[in-house]
Length: 400
Image (tube, rainbow, N blue to C red; front, side, top):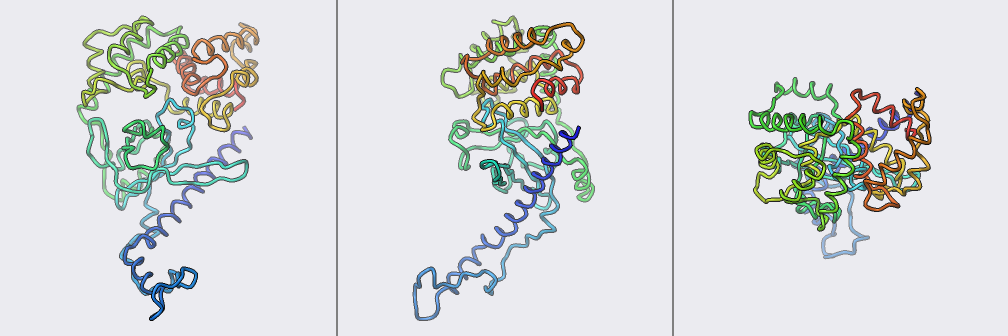
């Protein structure tokens, strides 16, 4: 319990550090970016008759300027913000492990996302990941509509165009970046809604219909994979990655359907086409196969997902996206597993079974990628009803 409390305190400190950095960045940028401020500085910097003086002789102190900035941004305005945690929806372990904290500003309906970065053992910093601005839905039923406070809720996805953004090259290979909101300060959200007189908005009819289609298909397929969830999810992931020769994360209808059929997860033409139409609204003929699997089989909730990410980050502290199989075997502990505690199975039997199942789902026998690690626990999650039971398995297995 002391360890968990210490981790919670550390997380809250990180979030507070990001909040302070955002306030400093936005308040300072509001003045420095003022075009009148810049032009006036140029005029004031050179004494009369000297012309273009060297930079070291110029007067560059902002407080001496007589220009009044046109910006009305104040700390009070910036304080009316909603903080949320997010993660990148990616099968790339390096990206999936990024610690993202976002802010939605109620006064102008803009948002920004910061990343909490570790540099070495003792140095940390909060850096802008998505700059502050007005953004809109880039996909889905609300495409083209500007983001509002109603879009900031746990489990919701935020889509951003990668064009013109300062993202890593591997992210720019895809036209869109998807962020999944994992936590929201609900108390602050309610206060902001009350102060603005807004009421909570529900889903549109089209969005409810899409959700019902996914729910119906998931109900059928999840029933079929009960009892063999780990084998099915790890096997599906491996076959899909093998079929993805280009490595861009998308496949065509025929390829995805053949992989599903290999594991006896056949869908009727009606159901398959209904899911495909929702995910391929632009008619490109190819969809993100990870998104397709989540749509037809479902996925564990964000509470469970946080423990999976925490366990993998312990195995991959450098955030390379992969963990050596030797480290997996070294850190995995089955001593606290319910079957071992009850005497139903031996610790070594469970360890051997875990390693065998994990190896079968890996493309490379000497290492485990984040998506392969996640697939294993996605399959395990299907057979566990209670969230705390699932969390305890991760805690006992990896000491988190």
